[in-house]
Image (cartoon, rainbow, N blue to C red; front, side):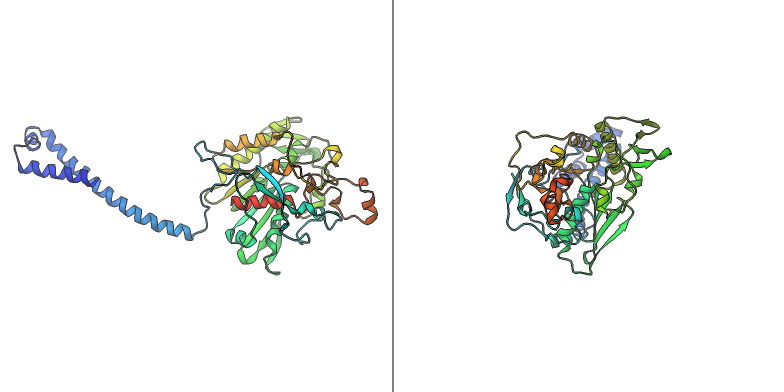
Length: 436
């Protein structure tokens, strides 16, 4: 650019010194040329100023980048090694799919003791009398990359002065308990506490100013009680739940299982979010779907699910800033409920592979909705890898059993939906940690 400007300048000066040259003669003969000379100097001045501004910008950019490195209020750009649903057509593809791999035995697992005080009775399978413990010894090994072992101190340092919230149903609560137990062991007694706020609960690591929160919203959208105690699922209303999600740095969502509950169940009363027993209560029932002023008694569950997810997606697009908040949507946790819930009973080994891979309808709908969003949402796909772990459920050990009851376990219900802890959700959180 400097060479061009200098050439123009020399040309102009030589023209003024030699009247016989075309430029000066032309300016004498043509008044238009005289009008163009000020424009030439304006252009020249523009080039010079632009060059100076460019140099100044480079220096100031280095300075600003230094400030950004010190300030930890925003999130860095996405890294490789993440399983992501692209929400922009021009976004780069990730190099590693963590959802594809195999389970391998690792004697250094589990990552925490089964006596973690933050575990609910329904998932403390060892305390409840489960005789085997090999289900705690399996580590997920992705096919094309490595999954870092969870380091509690590094996680807390990375999340310093931040809030992470897991939003969803009782299986998301299952994952929340896992994450709390993964970190709580490095925090001194008296420097950690749990608080409650409506449908939300939070574990606080005081010295790091970190809160790990759970918010109960299994459908994401609102479920209300109408006239004559009829329960209405509002497919286009979400603020009553979403008001708890504002100001959070990392939001992890899950919503799938409840949308397929078509049986006629009685309504459950309000309950405290810490009471896991109520989360195993017969599932909440709604009598009507409602969208705008339209009300439906029957609706295809996947159509309803898409409408509900679209409402959630619009809220995220309109209310969240990707420089301030990370959003992850965890795919549905598989259930092994065939044979009336006994498919997982007495299972001691993961499946090695699938004869055919089944993709749940909910996952297909979720992918379609997320791809239409402007906000960059990460899809954490845990469905297939967890489907191999039929050995990881509480089954009959969802409650404490005495010796006589263990002799006849078939007399009790078998939980093949939730997960024993320590167990499979610990791997979900290792993936979440790598994602962040």
